[in-house]
Length: 510
Image (cartoon, rainbow, N blue to C red; front, side):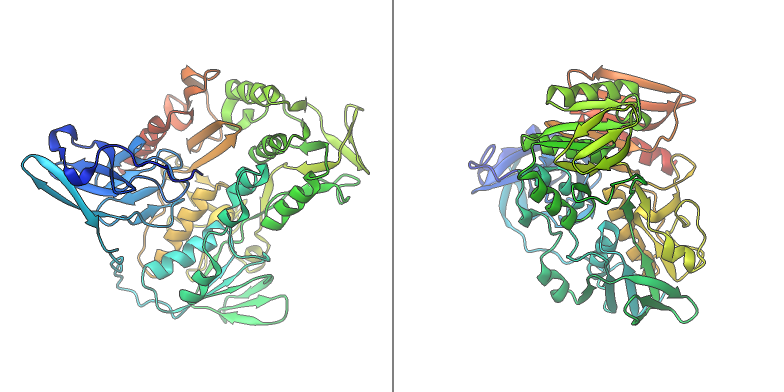
């Protein structure tokens, strides 16, 4: 995230700019007063909207215009240029729009336009009266937010096992853990949002069972909640290693805000930390702890970090990047016991640790779905509309295994943005809109000053085509199977990443 710039950018748009300076499909930034404004042209039309993404303040002018939309280069949020609406996660809030006038070969920007309320998407199906959402993460929140954005007037009950309202979970292993972001950045919406939108958010709610015939959700306290449509968005939980001492006081996992607070509290007096696992979460935690000047050791069984997802070349780069920032790796090794403040390794070595963080992956929380008799396939099996084998129950996020039109396989991914986008699609489908989930998976990871973007999904490949220079932090890697691109990873090639996403969408639609 970044603060607003002290000085506005570019020319004063109230004085006009030449239309010929703005190519069809092009963008540039100017200002009206102290506000940075993005001008975007599509044919004869010119649009004026806020210049920065409402997610992490990304520079939209460095993104991509697609039809009547603009896509953010950082994390692939998408906005409607006509209305400013946030069409795709991770952005939730709209852009402001500004009045535009063309005269004498020039474009003039006037006052900010009043916000345009979203037009309700119509459906032939009568809307359900009672919707229950199980889960307070990305998918659950996104579903509740989209239901109200679609002008749904019925009851919404969110049952979250967390102690607090939904937060921006990616930040827990990045800026917030590193100490560079305040906690007030974390809530996805203030508490007043749920009250104002009549979303009944029940925290510390433990769902134990579903009575599909009666259409009721059972909670651990013995209460029941009736539903007409039910969304399961229970997410995933960190894997706990079955080794002696894993439940000790110095050992932590990271999933919730409370988990992150506990790690931060332990880090205040820690001099040395051991991170078990070289996953994205594990390595982001390592980078964040290094930012707090803590000595960090990473223990993992693989030969290279992230090789399974990003390949050997990127794996070598990531290792070198972390080593240059002071991280010590103990690869092709594993923790076998934790004795007080000592982590014993399979190799026979032992590492002293004031703080241990396990980042060895997560498992989908599917117990309730399985108990209810829904089809399970290494997750909750859903169709293209995110419907389970019970038409009144949908699933989204980390638990959902859905038919991906690009790869041609049924896949389940644990990406924040995918969960948000599935939650929004599930919301519309609970209202009877029958919208297929066909968006291309996307995630990003941050290691010190290096962002890694990943588009698509490749569980296996037979070729990696590398464009640019990985070591120079300027590259695109295409993961291919039988000459077909399944996924693309990139560093500081934001427009290329957006273009790949668009190519995959076009290929899917063909």
